[in-house]
Length: 200
Image 1 (cartoon, rainbow, N blue to C red):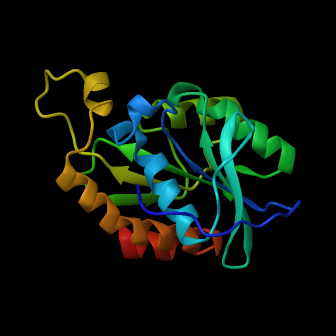
Image 2: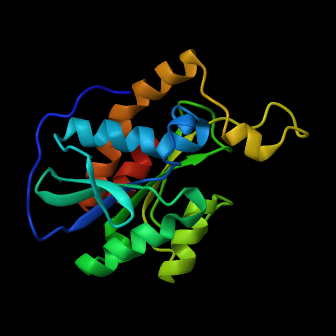
C-alpha cells in the first residue's frame, strides 16, 4: 500500500520485535482490522526492511530502526491467535514483553488518530488479548491506530472491523504513517513517555 521496500539486513541478535496485527488472506486487505498490518508495512518500508520471509508463523523481515536490530512481523495465524506467532519469536530471541511493540486497530479512535500505551489491558482487541494470554504479560508497548467506531450501535462489530476503509480513509491513514514510525522509534529508544506526549 505504501510503496516498495528498499533493502534488507541479516543478523542473529534481534533486540526488538515490531508486530503488526491483522488477518493474512487477500480478502482482508485494506480492512479496518488490518490497520496494524498496514502500518507495519509502512514502517518496514521506511526503514528499508523487506517483510517477505516465512518464520514464527508470520511473514517477517529484519532491519534496523536507528541503532536497534528489529524483526518486523505480520502474524499469519489470523487475528485471534496472534500470540502464537509473537510468543514463538519472543522465546527464540529471548525478548521480554517490554521490547515487543504491537501495532493494532482501535475502534474507539477516529480514523487518523493514534494512541500510544506502554502497557495495559487488551482493550477488547482479540489479537492483543491472545498475546497477553499466551505470554503471561501485559507489558507490551503498543500503538493503537484509529479505525472509527460502528456507524450505529446495532451494527455488527465483526462486520464493521472486517469492512474496508474508504479511499479517503486510506489517504488519512497514509498521512499518520510517518507519526507511527516516529512513535515506534521513540519507544525503541526508551522514550515512550515522549512518544505519548507528542502523539496521544
